[in-house]
Length: 196
Image (tube, rainbow, N blue to C red; front, side, top):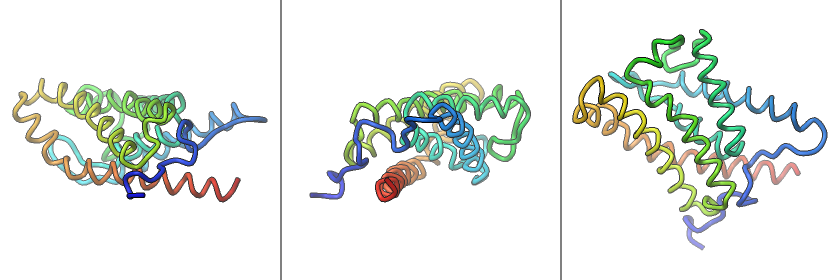
């Protein structure tokens, strides 16, 4: 069996983390909050670039889809964005408030919940059951983020410059982060299997 054909998740149609039985609702709520904190941490890992910083945010966004499924991942990303709007310094560079949602990065931020939900939705339907499929799902989710980001960024810079500064510098990082999400998902799934 080649690496790309190996199983990605032990249970191909469920997210890595499942919350059943007693106190499931409380654990789901805790997972949503923990996911928003993970995104804050990922956003603080940043390589300064103008006008869009390169961060680990998209890694965190996509990983939440793998770990939590589409509903909880979407809720977690929305909570994260709500925290930023409420004044918590959770965005890249410690940004917060309304300004980031009106500036050049707003399109990327708006696409984050969609990307997280897309990954979770694909995982729950078995479309990421093997490494190759999982990697493809991560690339499609990144494409969703770039589409939203570039559409908005182009209104500030024009289409050509938006592509030059908002896409091209991040292509290698996108490949790396997509592979990292897959690797992290496998690690979480294996760890969970050992502790069942």
